[in-house]
Image (cartoon, rainbow, N blue to C red):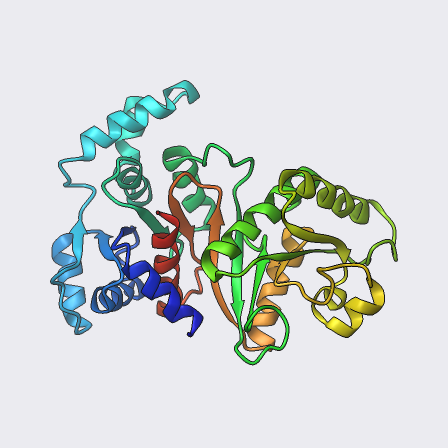
Length: 330
């Protein structure tokens, strides 16, 4: 089955409610209509109800079945402001600042999730990653067992002969600029878990470097070596190896030559980049030059599903990330 279709079909079994705070963006309106029509999630758009209803109609989208909430007029605004103040007063937040924050759709949407009135939130078509993550961190918070919040993309190209049925999961491509060895190990384990949950395959994780198992040296290589050891301690059952060069990770003939004793080399379906420069450049190269579909980004480590989009996202990107967010909200 097509990967994207499988995401939506699996999400439909859960019937989760996902908040789209950026209701003013046309892509969000179109995505809301498509999701409602496909029926795999309930959607709550945030914004002026009269304006959004009119804009939906102008796009030929029937607003029936799409919830629209105006944070400025909501009867929950005062309740949410009090809850936010209680969460953040130890950080110096004042009651007035909490009240002002609840007029921001990102913070109001995050509070809908925290209070159990929605199951997840997707934003970032308009707002920066920093703003989306700030609302998520401060209100939704991180999962109890998460040492770090990170991200991954599922890269999909059906005619690939490497990876797993045309899918490879890339991490971290959107959040952590210079992870240390312990953080890199956490990213590897979290990405493996996401791959297992979204793709249904058993992860084989390659931690990338310019060196393959000792062919090069330097602090960056040593960081990856340490991260592999830490990841093996954290998840002893996980198939993970590194440092591996990209070709040694993905191409069987090269993997067997450069790392003949590795069960991952040449067979990786999850690849972990050593830093955000490599990860962000890497996924965009594969997306633009190889023509792969980049499904994500998927945030890992939040207490509930909160996901950030690229500001260059398409309607399909939004729809896919809503499906992923629903699946994360089990």
